[in-house]
Image 1 (cartoon, rainbow, N blue to C red):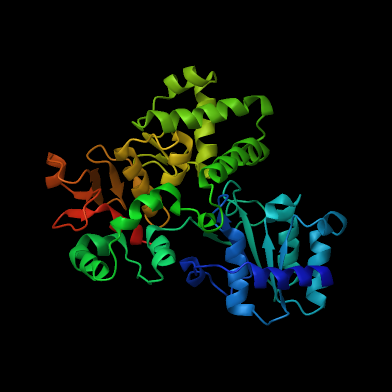
Image 2: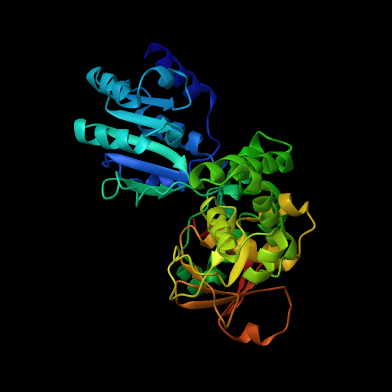
Length: 392
């Protein structure tokens, strides 16, 4: 226990976060079992440490531990939690809990045995938590996304900016933009955000392309096969499918063509797409009437965020696809986005939204909402694309 406490203290001193994530304000601090779900690289460990630093900095009743610690190979999770509780523990922060065999059963046992203990744990985005047979109905789940464009601007400039809902942006974008432009010029930072700003690690890792490719490979070679029982011989097919989606860029789904190209059945292609969606490598768009996890064939496919798209395509990316990917990466964490026959996207079942190049003339500019890619300001139904990065 002393060595774990020592590691806890060292990490709090050395791993300081450059930004306070907005998710901190959403968490119910009275919750007993709280899951923080996110993909590789979005900052789950730093989030836990920041949570501890903000609320329990000098409180010995709180402890951060990484479940990868060899200590847990000798002592079971439940027995450790029991000992921690008897020594006065009140808040336990468990990092990467899904790497412990039987983690869900033991968390349930802890929940039942220690009613005034709070457990906050991080877990891979691939793992189903809310529908887990042991944790269903008792766990509160929160999703940690990568940095929004707003958060990236705060890191780069030191200036705090408020969050706006998409409805607020639609209704008041001209005033909102005026207030922001009095302080900075967002487009001066936009290109860098598309290249490397989504993942907080860019502050430490200069070779961001290598870092992203390593994370993609770890996700495809370990996370997805481990959680979905995929044989190793099929890994090249998973990788090829991801590359084809990034390369083609037209985003329209042809399952038969994909099946032929990678050499697996149509059903397997569909499974692979959903596996990569859960891993937050892909975004799948379905009609509004289809549920998000319906298993139905998606109408369109996008790489999950601009940084991944750049890494997979080595910067040879169609500008239009890049900007649509940006819009999805910003809105998906907090808004419902569906396929639309009348526009690029349907937002919250209400707004038909098209992404257009600045100055582009088309009928789409007169219908629904137009997000104009390199515009600094908008007018009426035309909104600058960068402002979508302020929704979280």
